[in-house]
Image (tube, rainbow, N blue to C red; front, side, top):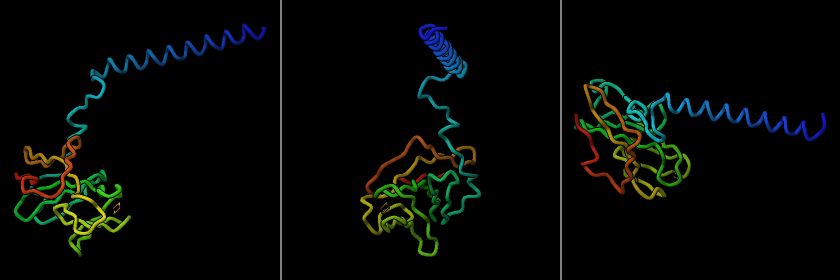
Length: 157
Ligand code: FES
């Protein structure tokens, strides 16, 4: 076999492999029945827990590591992003001091997400909270940026 026929065979094999990959991708796209970018509700709506288990006055970290659910004493709920609004480090809830603290540059936030101590420039982002059939859910596609807390940020059952 000379060099030219060897290279031709390599190109043919590369074409066959690329064709198989293209066919596989096309079939998986058609079988899933989803358009690109479309997400099912169950992908974006995360169940935090049952309403009866989420007590007023408590702060709950959500296990996926993206948010804290705060249920205020009047029953209103707020899903706070745990990303600090300064440079995006993950904040931690300090129950003894009743505030969120960022470990990177020491910004602090109250349980409404408002800045207590800069350099964070504005309140923590929130996610939309939905209460349905006794379950508390958070819509992870609906991140809400805000300057400071407003009463309308709270969700009531
Ligand atoms: S990233 Fe939180 S204070 Fe800088």
